[in-house]
Image (cartoon, rainbow over all chains, first blue to last red; front, side, top):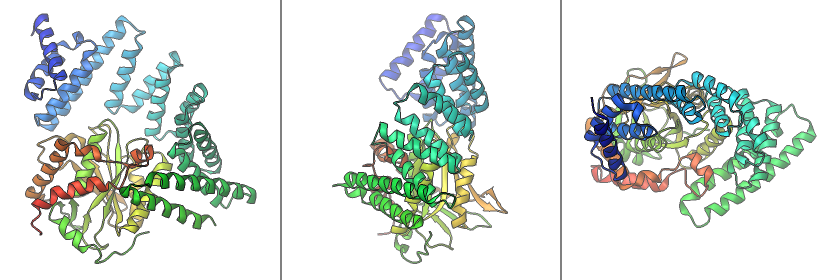
Length: 270
Length: 232
């Protein structure tokens, strides 16, 4: 067991090695492990960067993979205990609370992370980062309806953010069905209005319009309108790729692939 | 969608197959994984260590023989389970394959959560789609826990279609000589900084001047392969 001054010396050593990019991995693991196992609570904000440093060093040392996993878990659990103690002293420490949720996510405990985030958002309803994190978690869990809800919150408070529009459109497209496809198309278009260089939005507009136009369930007018939108998007895509491909030999492949895709979808639509 | 490209790329297969790792299986025949495909998959997973990543496995060898994964296309590192970009990527890769006499014959994924390398519903869905067009399709999961320098086994778990489900494939022998050289090549890519050349489809959409077919990186890897390759 180290004295406090010895512990501080070790912590400073680790910092020096980090800053000067030393690859003395064996030493880092020995020093770091002891610090993390015995003195996690005294490391403060350094704990994350130290455990990352130790992780990388442990990889370098080619430790047995099982042992490494257990150690990784142990370190995360230690970090968790640390944040619990912080929150006991100061329940309003949002940083600690969010870091706890990141730990859950890193451990693959998605449902717990979702639950904690929902609780967090009940209190801190304006936290954009948290809403976005929650939408990502829902997307990974294939819960698209709830992901859409989170993105709707984000779009309301950030109406000029093209990324939220585009992500919302992608979720709607994934949910499928004619109504969702039309919504998707509208939001891809909105994202493009906000940022006309968002390629995902442009492709998304092209694909949703093409799918709607190709659907047997739509009226002749809807079909015609969507073919127009699709054709417009296709021309924009072509133009963007022509400009990108100019003078670059290696882009020839991707340009050709796009052209062939646009051609083949034209055939299926008509 | 898939063409019978018998004989066309025989030469390329010969060059690549002497730099490969073999997985043998009783039922389905041998599956070879070329150095090029392995290196790019590894680089892709390393480039986005905190994300799930995925990509497509390609073959330039004729359909209906032994399976040889000769190349791969790294696809996404965000929102793997959302449909539009995945569909877009599949369509474009397909178009590129028919231009270059290759076919899509598999799918790979590395999970963000390193301790769990089992196929996600998204992985199974895409693999299923590929299987519809290619009856010896493989699903490859990268085992993040084994991705450290000096690991003696390839960080790979392979699945094949058997009895209407995806079953673990037996891996019998690994050619150590070639495996060591493959590892050396991957290490070389990291030391030279060339691993940063890797472009996946997601990065391409962020900047369409970037080449998702990775011509530049492919050339670097082939350069590293050829001195070791006995075929002159």
